[in-house]
Image (tube, rainbow, N blue to C red; front, side, top):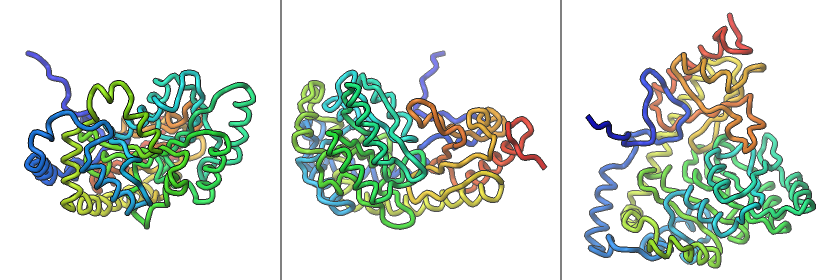
Length: 392
């Protein structure tokens, strides 16, 4: 009998509550609302919805998205937008026009670990930018760029997730945002801002993006509907100068393919115009806030010695381990106790950091499951087989 491949990326492991995956809670995916949006798009556009699309994306989505981004963050025009197959593809597209093989690309430390492979695929050398507990340090980064330039290296871009970052959940303070933009401008380095989590803010408005603070100058911003609607749409965008957008639209495979994900993009326009996007994201914020609070509360009650910050948005909690406990060594112990996570070193491009941190995702599990996962982690931390464990 033929064994079919898995239908989804995530495959559950029996008996394991997995806090390692940044995936949506399945019952929060808007199946019925999306079905209606698709029906509306096909009714409105007919065969036009199923043919090759415009290179930068279909007009209805560009129009809605420009207005939406302007409302939530600051001015954005349609000629500054390119529709992509998600934020990861947006990063690859931006890199294709910005990065040459052999270039240095700076990354925040820690930052989204799966971006490393995307950037290395471009032939870039990754170097961690200096950071502290508040995030990237602009002046130390300026000094690093100076040293790299002095050794003959070309630094083409700096990648970071400055708002509700993955993995930390923190946001770069406003003064550092302005200082970082000034440093990058003087050095001729393009900032690639992964702004995926902007609309998942739980305790107040998200800070203004680097894109809006810079007036769109010197910044390429990446966005996605994966977190706010559904990752299976494979739909996102980038904002950049009109010249950069034109360069992306002129890439060979874009010209050959006639735009990215045209049919889904038209359905997204219908979803947005009907008000379904606004209603859905409001519901998500309430649910994910509840999940965040459930995990934070349970960890503080059941995992003594674990430092548990409260992220203001996003999907992740960046927990500090008790002294003497190593994240990689803890992982197999935790999995024997029925819970999993991602160890901190994986979020540093050189692996040289984060040994005392673990990333816990609160997006995929319901509050009761998160409380149970926290209890299992607390048991693992106190297990005699965990180095540095505190036992009664």
